[in-house]
Length: 341
Image 1 (cartoon, one colour):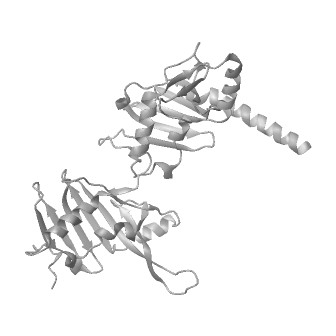
Image 2 (cartoon, helix red, strand yellow):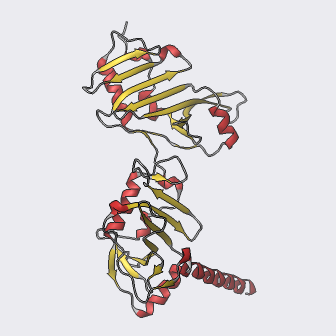
């Protein structure tokens, strides 16, 4: 019984502390003299970044406040999943109040929000302070809305509301992930028709299998060997088909089971294979690939891992794993395009 009382007291203290943080967050001076109702962001083209945090201590920032206006996971070299960014922008633009809360439910909802919520701070391009911040609670019992409270700059609304995005059933917090894994874009090569101008494949294990494909503005193809010598006769259909495979090339996952020293050591070794793909804007993306030699469970001799390779994208220190079966269509030697003898 005493143990249960202690647990209850601890929970109450945590709830009070959470409430203090909630009501005094990020330099918020005071609540307003009334409610704030305009959750929606009318022009999402002005949104340069947004941060998402939760009451478990997780935090992630998604930004496109860069020269390319590309959504990135801030603090990393990885793009953010564009579909997730689109979901967030749609919510920013369309979310409206479904209904006001009864007086009796306002205090209860505020207490719930103080203890558990996701906080989404929305920034305009080039600004250091969010112009709107959402505090997102749980869904209503009928899943027709979400309990939320709005902050505009440094003032918070005095009361929360039940809000919703028309056409969406369930809680809005499902659109706002705090996990890096959920935001990290796995795309490596995703080129549309006519976007590629050059593909260079450097095979350091077998240099004679290296080659270069050039594609001009009219989609005419030329094939060169690894020494930049033109190949006079080749299968143009196969080469043209090969170029199309660079539209959905993804990595499987980021390497997390190596120390920083181990990853540095790998990158000091000459890659077994390197891809360099240049687009019509003369931008080149490089992927260095190392085969994995490891000792299988129950064995004592190192063997080739036939499922994965390790790769670096644009010389990034963050290494990723690629699956052979996903990249098999581009792992071709020069001889693949030559006439059969």
